[in-house]
Amino acid sequence: MKGYPLISVTGSELMPAYYVRAATVVGVIAVACMKETAGQPLSGSPPSVATPEEAARMVDKQAPAPRS
Image (cartoon, rainbow, N blue to C red; front, side, top):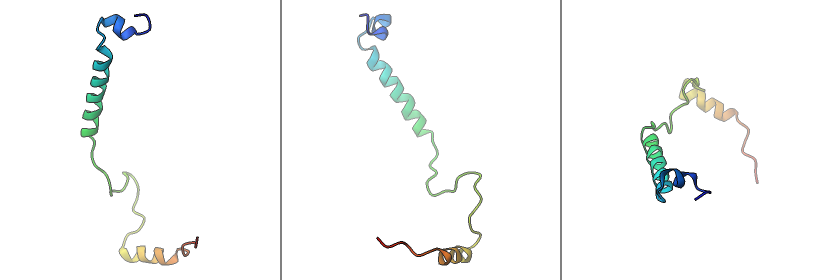
């Protein structure tokens, strides 16, 4: 089989399926090892406000939402 080097090198027509399965296992392991960071600030970013009162002042200073 000239057009399929993975099959011709190994002699197994199932080798592409094994290759995809191995890549899937690596991907699943990588995702399983990731930490969940939803709702947390990005590392290295300073807080934008120090107190809830400062946050309320910032919101009050914002321009009103545009009307559609």
